[in-house]
Amino acid sequence: MLSKLGLVARLAVIRPRFAIGYLIVIAITLLAILAPVIAPYSPTEADSANFLQPPSAAHLFGTDNVGMDIFSRAIYAPRIDLTIAVLGTLLSALTGGSLGAVVGFYSTGRGIRVWLSFAVMRAADVLQAFPVFVFAIALVASLGQSIQTVVLAIAFVNAPIYLRLMRSQVLSIRAMRYVEASQVNGLSDMQTILRHIVPNAMAPVLAQLSVNIGWGILLTSALSFVGAGVRAPTPEWGSMIAMGFQNVVTGQWWPSMFPGAMLAITVFGFSLVGASIEVLADPAKRRELLSEVRERRLGHPAPAEPA
Image (tube, rainbow, N blue to C red; front, side):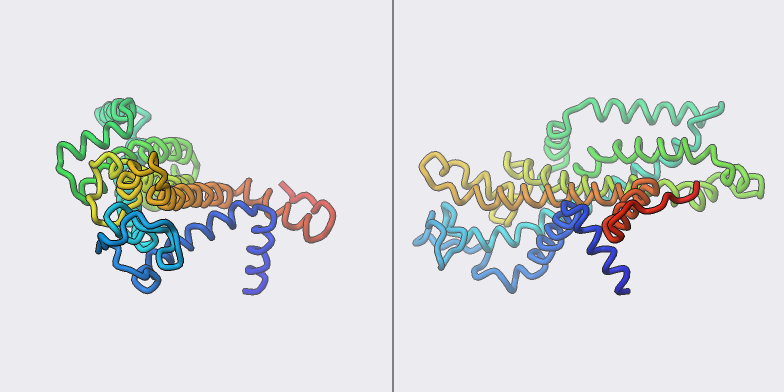
């Protein structure tokens, strides 16, 4: 256990940005969980006698234009943003990844399944041709404004990413000899996909998950900013920025600045976590990183591993 902790510590020294990413994500998650304990005020109750108060000991981030405490609302907001982004991203990975595995498996050869795979990929091309934000707004407008609709919008616009990612992985894995051997041994196509292909194709999908959670938070905030996402007074970073944006020109910068800063830091943290997962999930990059750790520990280049 101690040796593993030491390895993690040395990895953090060599790649400090990875450690920063994990610390940001952990901190934001803890804020969301502990918000009822930490928040000094209710996130939805307004005090008209104290509207647009600047940051002070009584209100760390100040108050907004209706008197709600910005600090309390800012630490409650990840509960909504993280929930929507995580659910939407997981749903997109499940649907897009599953479809990509099947499409990739049947993308070679002949027959109706090959043509169906081709049709699915062309449909994904059409979906990705639309601007993501405009497409999300159109979905919300057609399905109605609610948290569930925002989750579906995130899932729908991200699904083609996982479809293409999984398909490309399956196409390379499908040619492996152990896949051919499994089919010779009598496994059905679906058994082969689930047992041998999907587990070996998950590494880039896991790396993409973290990045898309960050972008899901950003998309949720963008939809709320234009009035198509989470409705006020529910605490959400995008709606908070929108509520305070009109006051920036008159000098009250804090209603928009603090939630905007937390939004930017959170998205940055998830992008760093995604980059670290991509490195650690790739065997070649992981060996390179571990070799660098040994060099730092020994003070000289580590001996090359046999091919």
